[in-house]
Every structure is written in structure tokens, then in C-alpha cells.
Amino acid sequence: MHEMSIAEGIRSVVEDAARANGVTQITKLRLEIGRFAGVEKHALEFAFDVVMRGSPAEGAVLEIIDLPGRAMCYDCMEEVEIMDRLDPCPRCGGGKLMPQGGDEMRIKDMEVA
Image (cartoon, rainbow, N blue to C red; front, side, top):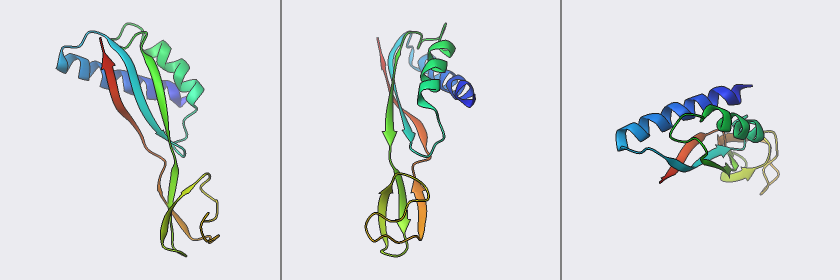
């Protein structure tokens, strides 16, 4: 379950940010995850709750923002949103797509008390 190690990485970032800004309690953390990031969101939510115990984010709400998959279609030369890496272009039906996004994951922001 790599979601546990992802949660541990988030904890490290949260603790560093809290320490640097004199924050003792984080109440909400918003995380952006791309469609192709390979993250099981329910497993990450569970891991987040477990890993954040004893940290400034203990009890914080984790809000996950889904980011779409994007690709450049070399048939119609448009950047398009796709549901799966192997989907044809939704505009022209072409099959020459180069993924351009959807595999990212980042902390968007945190709310503090």
C-alpha cells in the first residue's frame, strides 16, 4: 500500500510548514490528485488519518480535489481531457495522443486554527 508512504510524505511537509510558520493545529488540508497518479483515494484517506496522529494535522479534514487527465492530440493539435490514457481524442477520434497531465499530486493549501 503505497498510500501509507504518501501520507508519511504529506506529514513531513505538514510538520515542516507548521514549524516554519508557528502553527500548532491544521484543521483542513486540500490535496490535488491527477486521474493518472495511481493513488487509491480511500486508502489514502485511511492512511492520512492514521499517519497524522500526533502531528499538527491530527483530526484534520482531508479534501481531495480530482484533476483530469489531459493529452495533446497530434491529429487535431488540441489539448484535450481524457478519462483513460489509451482513449482516443474526444474531439477528432484520433489516436495520436501524448499525455500532458493528470499524474500530478500536490498539497494545494492548508487551513489552520
